[in-house]
View 1 (cartoon, helix red, strand yellow):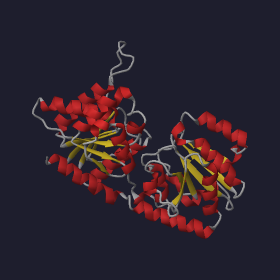
View 2 (tube, rainbow, N blue to C red; view 1 turned 120 degrees about the vertical axis):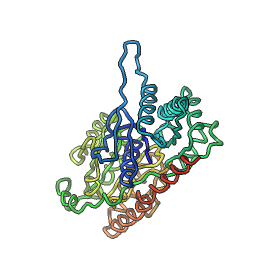
View 3 (tube, rainbow, N blue to C red; view 1 turned 180 degrees about the vertical axis):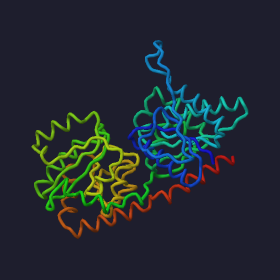
View 4 (tube, rainbow, N blue to C red; view 1 turned 90 degrees about the vertical axis):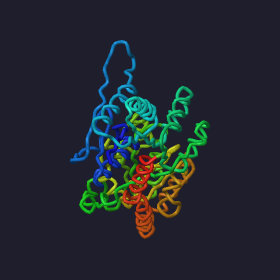
Length: 376
């Protein structure tokens, strides 16, 4: 198949998943065309059947905000016509689904068919999408999609709740995934001494440091844990909450035990040395960072919101707490880290849980959907 993929090229989960999906499709023999405004951060290696098409945006003095949606629709039409795309798969509803619909109609005027699939990832529905100024357009684009998927059952139900006009649209749940064979960290584990002593445990948090990630809760929980168990905290990522985090670590006097690494294209090497992953988000439609940690045999301390309980099984791959309950998260962390036998059991169980989400189990779900949509 000739498949077009539209995504955001940044560090966010939707862009990462879309890029990794495209690479896996290419490995399976499909021709994959990425269409976006810059090269996706995870698209570092090209093969003979992976192509990148940049959306260029003209900067006219008339526009305060360049019309990206129109530029994207135009590029989709161009790529579809000259590369004979069989279908288009857009990730994140805003503005990709509406641009896909526009492109589909322009191509139809030339008797060219281009079905498109929309995958909903989270904040396109639960945060940005429920803004009243977007609701009608998003509802329309979802309803006009030839197929719609959501990355979790929680997100599917949120979509029906926030967008009543799509209640009759069949939304299929196809979860996010990892490539388990990329998480063999024998060599990376040798670097553990760079981050902590043999007597210390390592806790890790990875996010975009937005308020919804509640990174301050990570520091508060760590402050409790370190007083019971010698440990260090590694923070991966950056964002608007960075200054608050720096202030809080000074107030708690924990800065000396916290290592901030900023944004990393591939955080897997850090996960290799971790003992525990912390994700205290206010909401997570899926929780890809948690799944990546489990793939690296790292148990997860997380909140019980959104799609997290679907992937992080209480008492098996990790522990769940209510949003903001820092004391309970710390208690759970101490329980896991305080006994080597318990820790090893959680590590193995985390890996077993991650196996369910290996790309080899998820890729066929997308391929079957593509065939179904093309055959309509």
